Length: 318
Image (cartoon, rainbow, N blue to C red):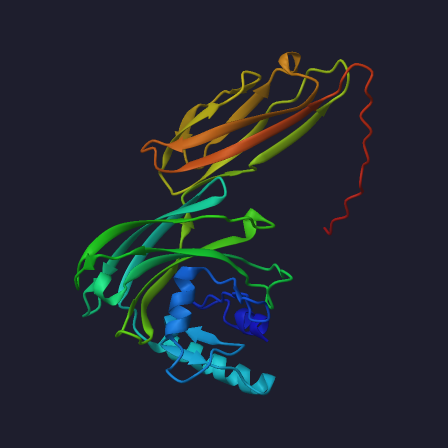
């Protein structure tokens, strides 16, 4: 049913994030990242137990403890979503993200359009939430699993003020990086021991990335030639970049350019060792803020080794 709701609201500014909560283990195993778990717990009214499925909207301004029937749950969840959509945004967020190993780094510019000063006193923060779309993990119940999240505290952001914040979300290991989505939101706690209030949320755009980002080749015994191949540098329009290979056998013919340009890659199989040879081309923007990689792996047969290949048919519709 959650998947159905996510599909129904797909064309509206609504994001569904599913966190796994295992209360059957001793001690209980809480999978939600601590930054968001604090917000979820704050949405639980005094004297009320946290129950499954616990659903929060707008960082806990609205919540639902679960329902007896699917219809009741559907009506309750959609009513909360519709209520949230009717609220005016009280912040502006512009955010970009980039991958750094297994971490997601985010740079967000936030303008506080509310009447509340955001500060450490009201636990205000800018959050980065990383999810993977269209994947069902054994630990989750929907195709919208939250992978991790992190918070950067807001020390002082007065009404009308603008500031930049950096967030790093670690330990991201998706099944498919192309399905990763990064959400940035701003909220604060309305009072001690009370729920949080969300000012605004936004989908962060990927600042710098490559397509494709991985190339693989196989060289039979005695072969040294690999045809030239390319990757295109994508990201923020107008961004300039530089490219550098970390192996002498992989050369980059275009070592600088603009987003939208491509790099031409050539190899020298004669200097490779038998077995797997891997090189990484690192793309860095001119401000040295964003990075992206192109990985090239080439397997070179050892003397006397025969590489067996299996060709799979591909069927397409006209």
